[in-house]
Image (tube, rainbow, N blue to C red; front, side, top):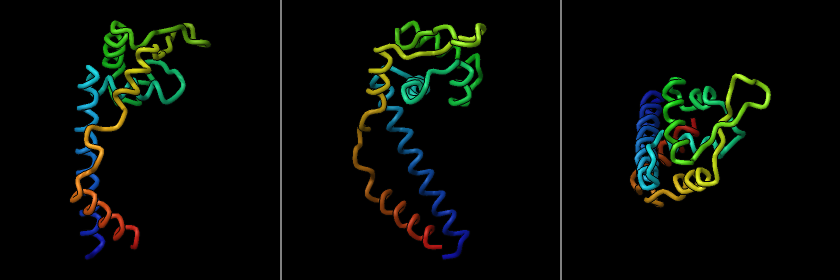
Length: 134
């Protein structure tokens, strides 16, 4: 197998893994009553320091106005709160509430399918082994 074929096989496996993980995360979000983007936002807020809406928008790769609308919905549900920025009087910092933290944990817990597809695992492992051997 040449490098080009190996690279294509690796990409096929990576996209298959991405598709599967995305579907499982979307299902977890739905079970928590969230969109997958809302679950992503809560997870990101739970994993690091509090951040501005602009920073969250950058991490979510969306427009600031989209992030603001989503934050409004999360705030109405009591999952996040806006507090004054400690240094910049013009900005607000987004914080998780206790309920938001519980939701972030619930939406990122063990996926419904805890065992990856055997064929997917075998294909990915085989491709990765061959790729790393080059």
